[in-house]
Image 1 (cartoon, rainbow, N blue to C red):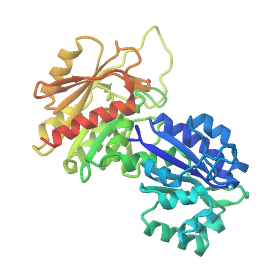
Image 2: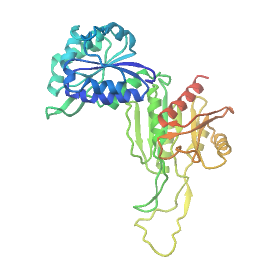
Image 3: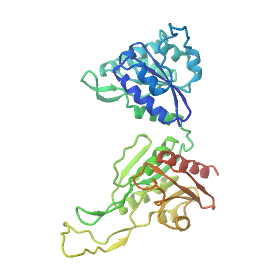
Image 4: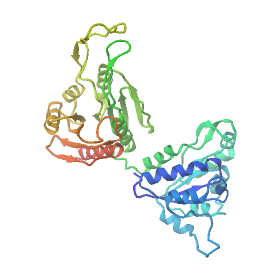
Length: 399
């Protein structure tokens, strides 16, 4: 939720300063406005021109411009910002902030800031582990500053250890999570994602084109809104960022059914976004099936119906959301599934909509409620689609 947020990015003089360009780009991509403040030594690692071009704002390094006498007011900066992110934050700058030293524009802005302050430390492992640095971080936390812990990895010194500045994507995710309203705090939500693979023999399977992107976006969104999320995913090549997501990996429809039905009773609600196979082979060949004759016949049987099963056992306090990917008679088919599975609402998308459905980073949906209400949305990135779905979910919970 960084749309329209005003963010100051403070850059101190460490080798990780080169990553600040990526941070600016990612913040702008989220819809934030960014102003950059640099220490004098930071300019040795990345130029103000680069950051000015990316942020579309002048980069501030001094209290005033000696060529025209323009004053760069740290007070005005502190009042303007919704957040102050200092990345990288070197050991020297952390020590000065902890002691209240204000000998440059970046530090005076820190003391003037009325907004939340985020610190992303970056230094060698022994510097980070030193008692002085740890004491300074403890002091800064006591002031209410939020520390984005450095990661473990290869450092500029060639050593490996904790001290490497967190990656830009994770830093921006940290800010995004902070500003996301926690409307699902205290809720336990189960989400399914991805395809299932139904084995034919040791090397072949029946599957579908689901990437799992929609389900993973939903998991991230629900977690960002404060929920404890259990994500049960079929075979996908995706990663998660939020710490409040428990990932359970499955392969077949039966495995997903078993995992979902085990977890469902303890959940406040479930979102079924996985593309679960409707049929599975009656028998799985022990050896690879050889190519013989003109045709091969495989006998199939229905897989367990997860949505129908949950619809029968859900309580009045639980919500159940389903998905319908259709190719024809979309509304009629979705309404039938909504009723037959006892869903609270169903998310409909059609393969006839361009750039929607399997494999794409975008989706176009219509939400059909069991009350008869329907809401349609334009084509948008799946992260934003997930927010739309969560917003509808919050409305149900607040009824």
